[in-house]
Image (cartoon, rainbow over all chains, first blue to last red; front, side, top):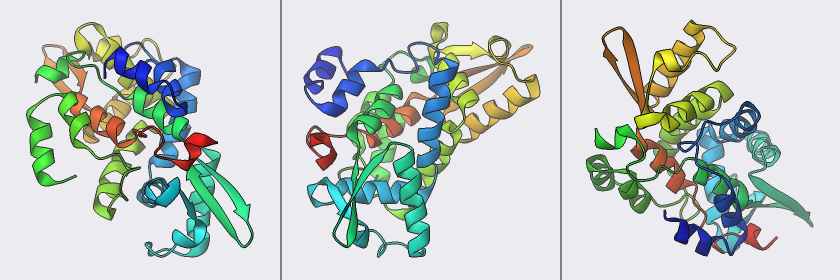
Length: 130
Length: 130
């Protein structure tokens, strides 16, 4: 992605994060940032959590009731609740109770931060030529 | 991601990957893809591995000798070797022995795959407005 594209994206929330964060291929991560990021990646390091996050993000209107999130999985409701808590504590989703149900939505700035960190400028790595 | 897309991705650089992969915010991840991706995120879910990956990627020429990778860390050589093995087995880095030393480089298509999966299209999520 070019700098120009980053600036265009920067008009919105998530891309402010994308614009702010230097990809990890550009300069070595410092220890504190690495600890912080590892927690977020740990939340993504589970297939059920990845699918939950994807279900929430791709749901109509960008948010999902917890009642929409149990059907697709072969695990118990308490397990789903635990995984949603891990995603929330990692700062990847927000949640709010409305009446009977809790609703979840993805926090785009957090995803954009991880996405931009993993961006590999074309030709930046020797691996690109292999 | 379809098999066809994987083949296209394999031929070239990270830009193809960025173009090929539907972000997880667009449609729900299937179970198999989620299992595959979770392994890669698990490899990133450790601060030392994140810093190693970043050191390798940002090193001159995009590759680093294992002899360049032990100095910055307060852990033993065998621990560094273990972390490098995890990164290699997750498909995030490649390696090659040349004479005395093993050299490592980042596999840009793998990083680009994760990066594009986490991309959040502007306005795609309800969270963007919060």
